[in-house]
Image (cartoon, rainbow, N blue to C red; front, top):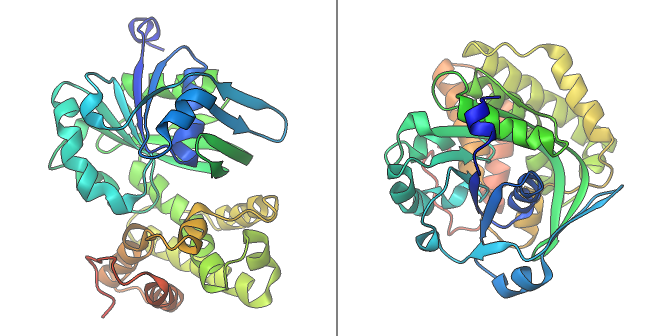
Length: 320
């Protein structure tokens, strides 16, 4: 780690006080980083009662966390951790431009494809990074998160190799006990994450609002899951991202250990919220069509999800 960076007081602003933002922000706070959270609702409750991460083996409490209701209240940040759903990107991106102009770097902790590109008109691309979170979390009330397992992350720059600043951020999370690694190819990491996100975030919804274990226990669900994974792998391979077949098997075995876990996308849908249809399902579908690769299971799943999505959601990539 760069000695100049390691001795510097790191200022982190977490945008999005959901499960992901609270978990990874709280972990950074244990490394003596100065972490602030942008909180839209129940800000006084979180300020008073603190942030609690409830894992199977321990409990992490951040007392009296620094919270703001708006980015307008933030005067400086080394890193902005964006942990909101991708559906809000177009509204958030212009608000980050002021801090980016002051040198702040953006780490996008979101699923799907094309998220970094949404911020490129407002933030220099060399200041944008992405993170893929392999973790089972649910926010059970404001400021309180249930951690079921895992927690590893893959971090990469939107363009080029990992910077010293990104490697330092990864080292901070490692210091907090997490398996966090920098990768040289963020695009490949995103396709690898889709191997899990596409089937499990989608099938838990279309099979009736079930946990990931029920997807695998169902003959129909397991068959569709395997087919979707293979389709995503095939499309990724066509774009030069070579994903080995055994990676799919490992994803399934890791998922079996999750039990009744319900992904956040499913919880959003159950709560009547907009789901991330565009980045997780429609952009990979568009990529498949562009490459001339048939993906009947992905086509079917995208159509099913579109029919179950609130009509107020706008899509840039039509199915027809």
